[in-house]
Every structure is written in C-alpha cells, then in structure tokens.
Image (cartoon, rainbow, N blue to C red; front, top):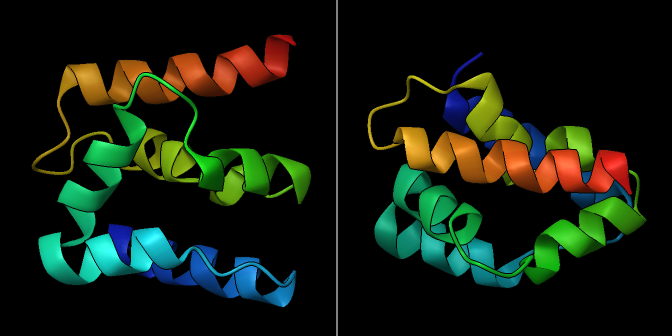
Length: 94
C-alpha cells in the first residue's frame, strides 16, 4: 500500500462514518498529498480532523498514523514524524 492509497482508504473509512474532511481534500488537491499531510500534522494545535477521527474511533486512519506508517516518504522530515508520534502518544496517554 502506498501513502496515497492509505489516504484514499482513510477518506473512505471516514465517509462511512459520515465525515468528509473538506479542508484536507482542498489542500490535497492544491498542494498534493505529502505537503497537505505534512502541514496539518506539523500544526501546533490538534487539527479538527484529528479530533473528529478520535471521536469516530478512526485514529488508525489519521494523517498522523499515515506519517508513522510511511516515515520515509519524501517530504516527511524527522520533525514531521516526531509531531505525528507526539500527537498520537498524547491521545494514547490521556
């Protein structure tokens, strides 16, 4: 599975639970998958999509999970991976 396939499946899973991440979809269309994921993961606050996926019990399909699954993806830095891990660890430890 590639990063794009993972994200496509994430979007499908989200849609099955009634959620459509429109801001991410717009950003992905204009900036590409990697840049959209990187920008959202590296924000200092939890983005609304992350909170929504947590509520829907879909964190395994979050952008953060995508980064950890594909840490070597060109465009993901060590910082990107660290943000993703910290955000998911914060939820798991809460």
